[in-house]
Image 1 (cartoon, helix red, strand yellow):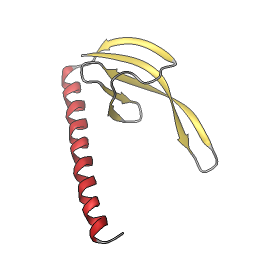
Image 2: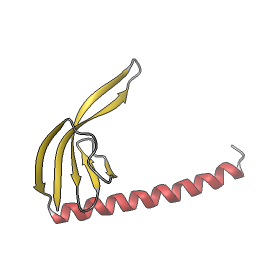
Image 3: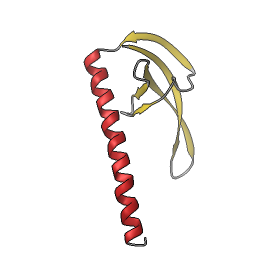
Image 4: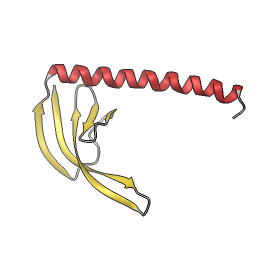
Length: 94
């Protein structure tokens, strides 16, 4: 599958101030998933705002399947986790 390689900026918060950092990211076109050097995997309909574009390359299918499964599992867990804690918050009037 085709991957678009680019650099983007993220904002990090430290105790003293906000800082902007540059990170390398790949958007896998067929899956519409971004991955980056910080081990973040998430859905995105397009590459995020890029300040440098390094081209495209073929991402191995096995890797793409693993990334897709990871994102699906995380989304499922996040949904279940939200429901579980929603019920507990009501029950314990937290």
